[in-house]
Amino acid sequence: MAQTRLRRRSAIPWVFATALFLSFWAIFFHAPAGEHSSDNNLLFYFASADSPLKASSVPLTAGVVPKRFHSHNDYEQSIPLFKALSYGAASVEADIYLVNDKLLVGHTENELSPNKTLASLYLDPLVSLIRSANVDRQTGSRRGVFETAPFTPLHLLVDIKTDGPSTFAKLYSALEPLRFMGYLSTWDSHMMSTGTYRPSLITVIGTGNTPLESVQALGYDFNTPRDIFLDAPLSALPQDHRNMFNATISPLASVDFGSTVGLGWIAPAIGRKRIRRLVEVAHAKGIQARFWNTPITPTWVRKYIWQILLDEGVDWLNVDDLPGAKDF
Image (cartoon, rainbow, N blue to C red; front, side, top):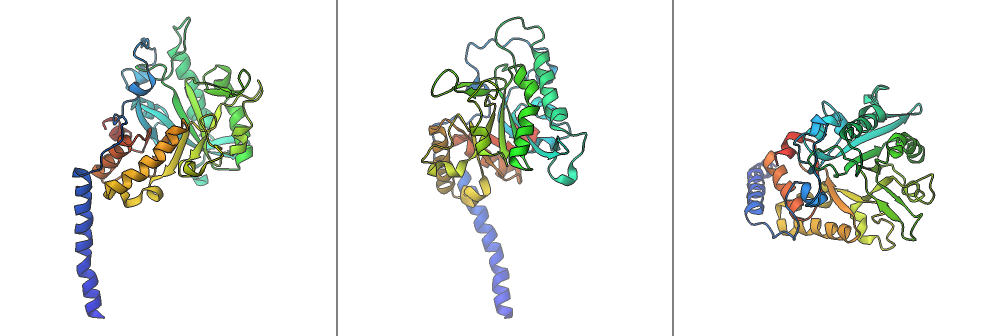
């Protein structure tokens, strides 16, 4: 028995050394990436060469270059929304609970406060920011929240935590101020049999308990435009033979990095292949890809995995460390 315990103890350093060796091998002898941009800069993706980048009256994002990262659980930042925008995050996330007919924001029910609503933390500030950005604008396209890229849309991911249909209905009503101003990306089928997608300054994407059926029901009459879309399950796209998830329903698809790739990143030929397969299927449908639950520490592992994701065509990095993502 004592000898067995001794063997187990002596094996631990070898396991650690093997993992460390494979990690360094993965960095220096990684598999070749696909033909995708490995840049975290969003300007190449959204702004055309002749975009009129005019001066904005919004000091918050003056000189800020929008980046391809998503501010995960953004409401937990010291200043929700504003901090993310100041670092260039072009996507933010809010978890919502329907409580006493109010949409409260928080990670768990114990953290909810009647003063922290979706309107007060996100919707009202966005209306104010965009109005300020266009205060001197007489004609032409509206400017969005980023001064350097005024036509770059902001993704607002809304993670529904309570009952799907009832919370979705309340969310749809809460978006009316943004809808009235024409700030929301929409899809409708009024003019063409295939429908028309109209990008705007904010694209709202429901996740969590957001019902697919509620999203599908929108866009077929003038009173209910589809301006809430669905974050599709990225891992389900290869089996989506009925094309249930497409760009008119889901501009974005996401998956848990840990359950999909896991330690495959240590062996690049395996990890990259898993990532590439899902990204290619998503892009073939006109859908952007995001992997959440990527490693946070140590920093060198986090950055290495971020680079793999960008190399393989992933559209959005899921981040908690805003300064680290800005400088990446």
